[in-house]
Length: 521
Image (cartoon, rainbow, N blue to C red; front, side, top):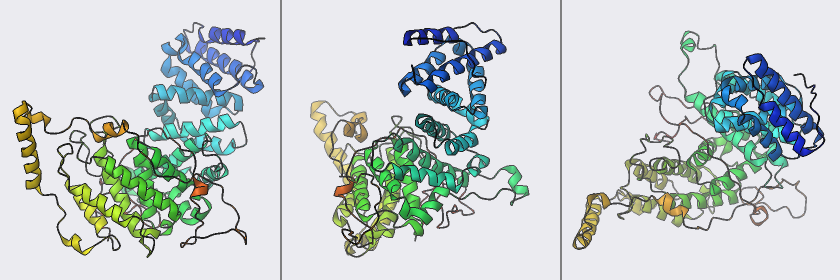
């Protein structure tokens, strides 16, 4: 792009006035629109490079919204977006790319059709290329590119060709960024990088579960199955990138939205069902994870989604719609809890963390008679039975059927109606609370389990190197730190993988969710 410009300013007010003049110009043809966009990018990128008037990301956002709110954009939205996308595909100047990436990010967050257009025009491979090539360029540009990659990938399925351009070097680079920033849990890089890895894992699961294209039936070898590189590299290099795992637990403890929790839980499920990653986490981190799961299972009402229309094991609805997806979320927590208790260090003699607390939670999940909680569904009963069958959790009295007593629940409701009748409150629609547990929990301040903060790995020395029973260095006090938050993302049901990183498929299981209730034994 030609960056020559005749616009010169000598103070900040003149800069913004000049910018307003550029974006307010009347453009009745595509040629005039192109000229205005070239002037806009050339003018603004000049002052990003010189750092005269665009001192921060806030100032760059102001530049982007000047164009987004202008008559030029409002009258030609699709054409302007497409021209900016073409600029992303073709431009090499770092300052111009900074403005382009920022504009597309803000435009896409306002109208998701922008991200769909980027995908259609082949922006995903370009973003992967730029993120790797610009790792030593402007830090703000690099972060914008990572965020743009995440936002574009979270709302739509990627193609086989898109995911094929993600190689081992790219994924390892993402893990290395997290390790390098492990001393600062509040560093803004933590959020977008972790989210990129989570959404890539989701895309691998989506592609593995998707039906083959029509052409694949003619030549089954034309398109090889893609390996989930997130799981593959954690299987082979997990000991070098443990900070990522610590952050997963940190974020799960922090999150309240449905989609972010499901994204994290799906990856945890794969890690706890793949033999090579059974012991990826430190034992102390697993203790924290058990605490988080216990708390969240008690907070959720798995029967509250009567109107969410979700299938068993599915992703539920968006947070805030229907029942808030609590049923799907509680199912997923139970599906993760089972391999966590059975396959990790917690199954070793002497490492049986909070055995009685876990048993009490499992008992409460299937034995509830409160009028404010919906009846227990069959999936919860089945998943609880699966957890209670684990050797170190099981007790002889578990042979007694744990199913809730329908007669007892009916009697409880009848007693409640009888108590209300003298007060004129015997209304059929008042048989249960209209306020979900999630709504109540949002108004109550709860104490969260203490968490290890991300930390930089240190070389072992002869002095002061203490190992736990599992051979890992455990120091919970030294790893306790700040909290992170992650924006919500969309999720879809996917398929689990085998210990080689490939999807586990059965002839009769196409269309099933990744957490389908199969006999894991």
